Image 1: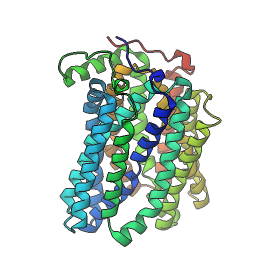
Image 2 (image 1 turned 120 degrees about the vertical axis):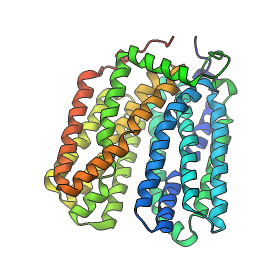
Image 3 (image 1 turned 180 degrees about the horizontal axis):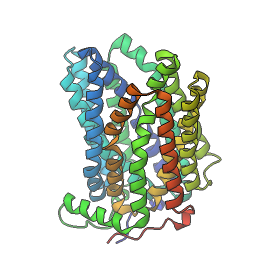
Length: 413
């Protein structure tokens, strides 16, 4: 059964405002994230509130990935972007009302994060599953690179302004702004013709069967050797990537640069992703995807290995920039490659399973690594993590085809 949505059906006069509006629709995410965790800390006065809110968010997002994949492949993806963005906007406006009235409580924040995960995960899945059907293959790296560049630049701006906004006006304007941006995202999807969002030429069955969809997706992954290896390797990578992503505050304390240094490290990581994404979307559009994917992993692994051996502030500055720069290989090249080879009608489900497998164990791996940090030298822990990540990068190199033309998957039955 062939798909009905091809990029020839979406001229630039429709595609460009859709991409711009969707990018704007994602603006405010970091604003809201900082506002939620800061407000939770202010309400409870305990750092455990951050762990609790973060755990709820991460777990709900991982579980939602399994369900949302089936939703994305069963229903019209363009309509999902409209309706789910609108529901997210309503959620933000409700929290804005509580915040403006001064009655915001912890349980409101928990409900907000659950709603963000349950509604936001299929939004992301619908967009990433729809994009390869409306953008030519030779432009997909450029588009993903530009979207990543915008996202990182927006994150930098929001992170810089969030403290000022929260100090002057509190969290209410943050939720209001995010709600408005979600409405922009909903309006942007209306630029696409309705038929472009249909993953099948006709419905697979008369009713939605999510359990059957999940079992069929697992059978498809078992059948396709490349997918089996990608899912397994991504699972192993996520175990190490999560602790490296959250290691910045611990390193800042260990090298004696305090909270200011922590903020600077985070900014450098975001800046590294921004630079890498700009390169990928300009001169790097024709670069081989698999070597760039694996090379980025090896780059930040070697960088953290050097930091673990030296533990010098100047080295840390370079390392966290290289961390973001190297992560671009996964975020742009690896993401684009898997995105374009997956058959459209099963793309959402496979991405949902990958998201679940990668995210569900991250809280556990993070807890284990932080416990090791409490009982061992930070430098030693970084060396261990770096060696494990290098081993995973070598596994990618040995187990995955290096030539893009060898990445061929069969049509799901």
